[in-house]
Length: 151
Image (cartoon, rainbow, N blue to C red; front, side, top):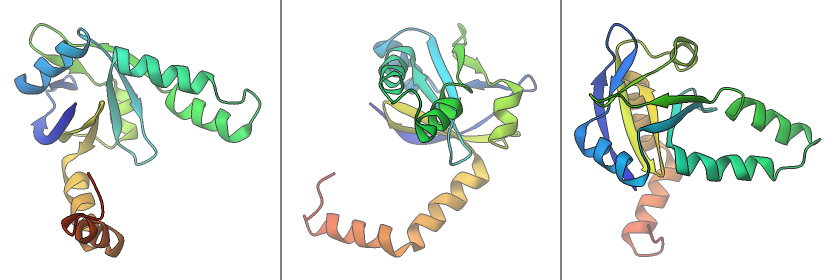
């Protein structure tokens, strides 16, 4: 399971150095083969290959001629890129994916269970601030602290 956030810099070639702690976890669940794709929230998703294969299977099980299912497949599968972590723990974020997520220099790598999200650093901070002031999020936090919601 991946969790936590790290603020990192992309190098001039658009490479992201995965922090050692997360790199070890990635290697433990697979190898250096990863899959990078887009998300509707305008961030990137990074999956270890084995976790991505489960997602691909779920996409394959969607109705073949349903327009909504087709749109979802186009977004996630149509933008998926195989990436490999090099010996220094870096991955290259292709230019078209960096442009999609408005990634420039500073990014946030956010662990979310079986995957990572990669955000523009400021957009990630703004997203967190919005969540703190969102009444729905506040109600969930209160319910959790009262024991009604199990995380």
